[in-house]
Length: 356
Image 1 (cartoon, helix red, strand yellow):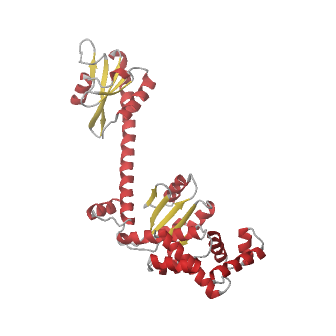
Image 2: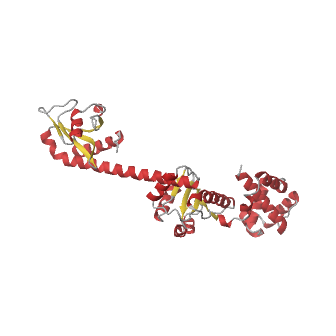
Image 3: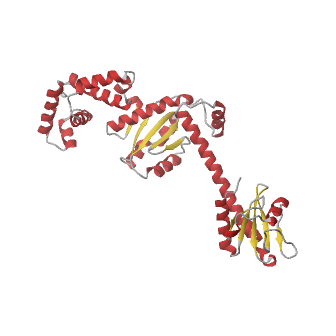
């Protein structure tokens, strides 16, 4: 573990606030890297170097002078039997010895906390690497992947599915972090700026009780979940989850499962140019507002009453607008067969736009 200048400064400040004496933090080579006297930072401290080398306190007074050192006591600081530095306190050594235990304990608390933070950060980075590798199919280092699986206790034989959330509201990142931690979901990741990804077993997905979360946080996220895949095929589940969440967003819904998608799944195998041509053939003469009206009309199961209410217009106005659309494109949205062709054209247009 390496002591940074920032950490050394924090330790010095904390000790100074307690003992009200000048304090130095000296690295094992004898260089002052933190001090209550800023002018001394960077100076060589011979007594500190000796204390680190000999692993014992070094007193500086008239009988024991050292280069670059003022009267005082220098205490080596240990963590797991390793000297990480030396704390020097300036003053009459006869008056200072009572501070020795307090100084070393304050420093050890800082160092243990820093070490724990570094371990947690290292573990978090490793987990992020694992999740990113799995959802993007980046499996170039199988040995490291296998080591990480063992480290995090992940069963490679168990199928999992990917839940993908697009964040709509500010401030949802800490809410989601707490939610997944509370539900004990290990493989969970925030992707800047607005995506959250979780890799779930069947049991974890049930434990999540996701519909309840959506009710508690309305309009905060739009989500999709992919189909279960083997661990090293999770890229497919992630892509499925993206497709499902995009479909949910288009349909003004908060959640969609990939298995719910029918026409979209079929359209994935159709070439983009072919979908674009079909959409242009059916919808080419319509304005964007007219296409949006059709989306709302079909989303409301062709109910004139519900569509008119959502649009905030009179039912007769809606009928007139639907007649106008039928006249322009030659397809009546109130006739089953022609309505299906219009819906398919809208899906083709959305799908081809997604693949641009």
